[in-house]
Image 1 (spheres, helix red, strand yellow):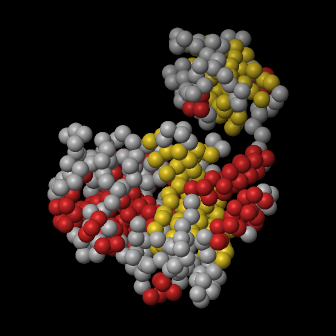
Image 2 (tube, helix red, strand yellow; image 1 turned 90 degrees about the horizontal axis):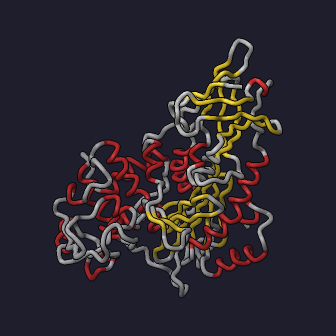
Image 3 (cartoon, one colour; image 1 turned 90 degrees about the vertical axis):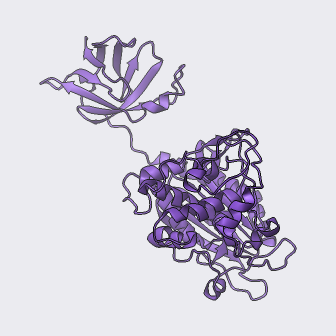
Length: 468
């Protein structure tokens, strides 16, 4: 049982929940990633009720709406290369043929709104009879003509309204701005999948791909058809394995690992923008991003993207700040977001507790008395007096009247790093996290006694000179 392997202390109730899903999903594969390494991967059940076979981390599944992640990567690549100028540009700037009635105003929708499900576009792609699986042979021109007869369903940038149409428009329409690429699928293969080494991910369900797939099942137990989404493909056509999803997650999380090498796919700064939340739901816990459906858990924001299509369910998720990722794929209809809550409710506390237990103690100067004393600012900034105290083998910088008291990890004799005390309480508490990691610079005399110090990141322009 993979959850038992990852965390032997899992409760019986959670084991029973996980084991019960096998009645609904005959096949499940999963992987756990930490610091760009797949630390566990495996599968349960059977690939096919009719023919047997055991699933593993290389078994292929449809990933449905997780396909939208690749649209977002493409758009950000185009931003870096100058094919688009801004995510806040209107879609009509790049696709003049696009037009849809906006009964709520005069402005057109923007690229950022479309990627974060805040565009107000209808959910479905307007193919024949409005069905996604009748999109074969549909062209951009067909869609643009049909959209002129439709309307937005919500005012843009007000609240989320899930739209497959938005992603199909972005993928199929914007790719025409890039020279030498005729189709969105070709672009994704050459510019994203190949550089990331995702060799078992794609769009076309060839015989060789189907041979590696777990069979998908509808809720009534019948085999789900492998429908081709055609023009709607950017929103949900792709297949993959948990091994390949681990590569994708490692690439995205690398933007928060400053020691990792840069990728040719996207710059780290671009990825970090791509991972930001854009809309907080009324529950105060879940948020929307591009294309993330995020949840705050144990003080960390879990980036998630779920995928649901006939016969298959996918959870692609990660916490970049912890370098932790979990991917699960099922051959059936599942509640992937409940699964993410169960999994991260186990993994985040286990990991953070383990990391806390191995953290080194803050550095400490050999002669703390050389730093202790009262200092006065040379300019009037309203907080002109500061004290440095030595308490329990830790140096503290105290600025009276500010409510701020932070301890200092000394890197060397002339440099320290500020950290917020866990018990800090002041009217500035919401701003205090911005102090963490700020450098303190000391000037020492010939005897090694600190004569002044500066904190340029926090108190720019102020120099505190020793008075006692």
